[in-house]
Image (cartoon, rainbow, N blue to C red; front, side):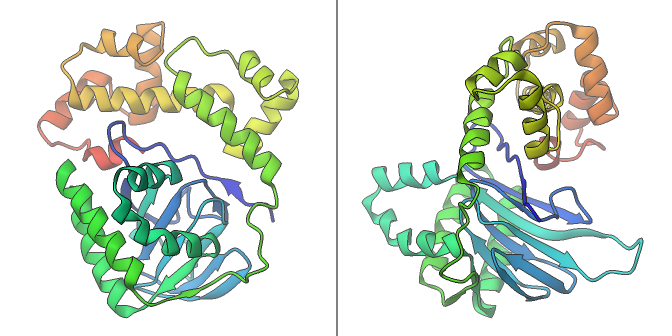
Length: 296
């Protein structure tokens, strides 16, 4: 079965993403992404799949995967049963790590860990406890504290015992051409989604006819082109509503919408409340939740 591409959009002005989710969940499937991922399983037992590896997993399971290696955790639950917070996840891009290495030569000591992550690695009990404590703290830590916790955890894991999961012959880049094209397209969209972005122009960038590009984009993202653009714009709108004093109208145009009524309608569909109510709930710490969930 072909893995799906997961689209990871970190919050602006943050170098990495830390979040938690339940099960079943839209990302709990056979998938891949160009980011590194540290995955901690809080609850349930079942099977984990990393590349060509299949094994048992249970509470405390801690796995680190590299760019584009498919992975999934499948819990053994009775039909209709769900878990509110099964997974703790830390995700960061290769470019971020490269920038860190360029600025701080000492950061190079984690290179072995990053190289091994290409095939997925699993850690032991001591690392599981350390990762759970640190990642849980990162969920609510201030920006500077988050960075300190991240560096401390990465340093610890670079020295922790671990075992490789996928076989040495496994090639996570088997679909390299497809991955390269969709990653180029998504990078271009991420840079330009606040502008007047037309699907035909992006299709031309990918050197595809319009209909073929539409099928290609939906197959790789699970969304139409317009749905994906709106997803990015609304996530950015949530950030601005929470972290700026701009008016709703200003935010509407700043994130790329050209009609306030349409913006309000799309926001209501996504958040089940108006932009003004979303801002008010955030200011009073009401039912909107935290910024960790607001941008998902």
